[in-house]
Length: 487
Ligand code: HEM
Image 1 (cartoon, rainbow, N blue to C red):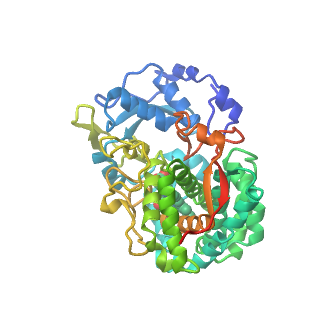
Image 2: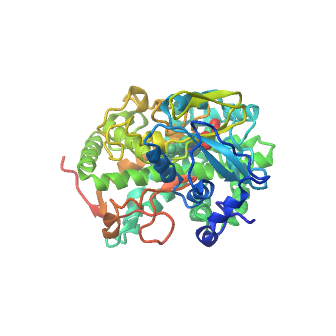
Image 3: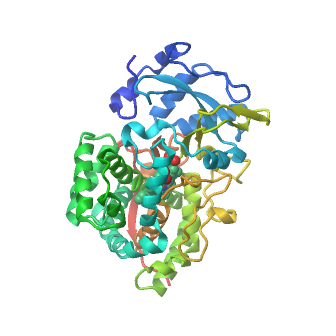
């Protein structure tokens, strides 16, 4: 049986008869088994779940299963079809939505499942060998430290952010056409990554930015190996902190995995977060006005942004954190393999034992939208009360990971996101510049879909907004207006 995967042609993914997957149940390919108080009895569960993954709505499918159980905090055991060893297998995957289990499982079981191995080989995010991960983490940490590294590259990041307004005016054909802000932000975050973090040349960035993003959107995917080769060569000529990570590397497979990981996770996550943030601001103009006022005050005090003055934008911080809650770019969170026997909370609220080797997914989406954990979780409210540990403090750039038992946009330590501070820095700069002389409002078709439950995010590895015009997979269209500060 030929089974489509993420990298299959779009047509095949859309037209495949998923129901035939049920035939694999109770055969040699099926390693799943019933776990009392975690498993659920649903017709066609294996095919429906697999289909939801490939079509990018597994976060919504899992939410619907929790709804059926009438328990938004329930952990679930689902039969996952995968080909991690090269042939099809159905394995149990424990989807953790209970806030008492999420952090503990991440901290105690660092070993990853092989979910990203096919694409990223033994990169830092995909290696299933803890010793290898520790060594990579140790060698990469300095490149992301707020004062050791980020302050150094701040001028490059700033230089690129200054170019945002001109690009927006160009994309809007001088304010006459709507702008696809998903495209704009993904372009800018790829440029920030290449120029500031890697220190790549303008020429390299211009030549590769769109093409490598196309690969991640499933277009001209054969360019990936050419890009990896060119980018690794470019690191040898560049002195940005991320380039230096590759200078001494002797393991070519690992380097290829890491360069692809950076090119993807290092721009896509931040690009989607900015897109969702602008989406919510256009949906809630009163918060947009409040942010604009804060930004205008900032520009009154500073001719140019400085690394040490970012903390003077507390409402911007709240908007970013609320966006990371509602629209976590990695809605799927993280996938772990239990390193020893452990337990999670079952449907009867008692501990259920799990064996060493069990696969777990510590999903972000369900906890971030859980009505037992948040007031009115489906509404964007940057003024909501965050716990102290969930928000960056107003004391300059913190090097810590914002998280709590109900919230983990960058997952939990020690295997949390390395790029979170870089991403925070570039988001603030880009927001400062795009709002400096401009305002935004939804384009007509975009506005018409804001309450349509169909447009809840396309979740293929990362989660972005579906393109309402159908021009590509992702899109978010707004009109750009000139404005002057009222201060
Ligand atoms: C808003 C932006 C971002 C979000 C929400 C985010 C989220 C995450 C999450 C949830 C993980 C854990 C994934 C897993 O366990 O499978 C992760 C890991 C990682 N992220 Fe990010 N990320 C963001 C930006 C970035 C950027 C800009 C970079 C690099 C420039 C980056 C580099 C990494 C790396 C290297 C890891 C692997 C860490 C390890 O395994 O030790 N991320 N990120």
